[in-house]
Length: 162
Image (tube, rainbow, N blue to C red; front, side):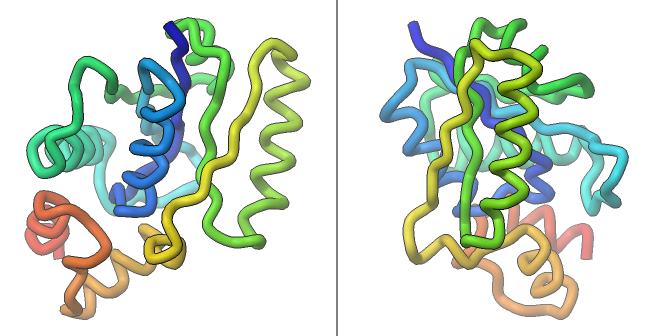
């Protein structure tokens, strides 16, 4: 059974992230979707809120297979997470060329830390490549319509938070 880890902040999860999750499930038997509290970021949603939003978005709104996806939080290195779940691949989503430099460096560092773990870059579908959690939060804060960018549950949680 091939397992991959898809780490991210998912603050909040968007249809761009969900595209990457769906594409990963076509390649891997199991996917660990892992959200973290990176110390360099100010989060809109707490770690518990993000876990709740991810779970409700994936399993209630989109009816994805719970047997194939595990949603967790983590606070250690991604390569340690891979060891824990016996995953040989880290999934990273790319939206634009501007994402590539950072992601390339991150993949290189992970490879140096553990040469047995590969990084796979996946792109969301064209219509979702422009979506970012940052823009979704800004639109929500300004009272705009975010229905095309996130699941129903995420819309609900953003409206409550705003």
